[in-house]
Image 1 (cartoon, rainbow, N blue to C red):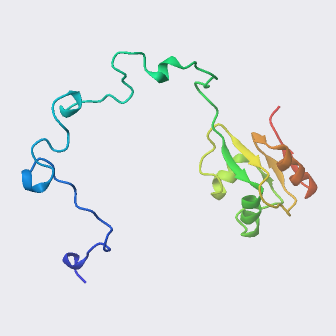
Image 2: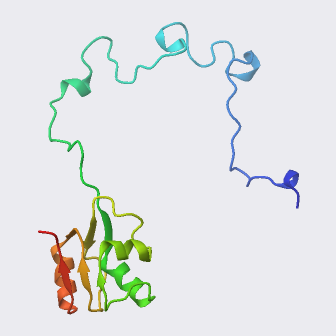
Image 3: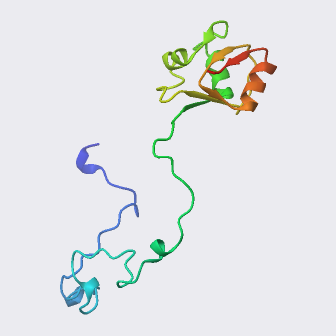
Length: 152
């Protein structure tokens, strides 16, 4: 097989509609833009514009608060933690810290810290030191005989 013999699946690509190419094309002369007016010209961007009236999105009241610099946590679930222990990528006898999680490949980077969530099953007895953990995750680790240490 050569490069010039490769072709896409039937129906995978559509040819672009060529506008302004004469009356026989069906989209000739004005190119489907109608006659005159702002929208018939090029360079028009009037998505929220209401003819000078205050646009709807500006008339409605604003609610809530967006944190300007929110904390971003790397998230791990109990099920994935157990999978890495089963595959011998993590040693459950050692204290598992955030640096150990990064070194094992379970977490790509720490960001503002690592947060443990309770999805999945944990059967190994582990000692974890992480930035944050959900209540269900802490209960599951303690039920398996382990411990979770959080910064004060």
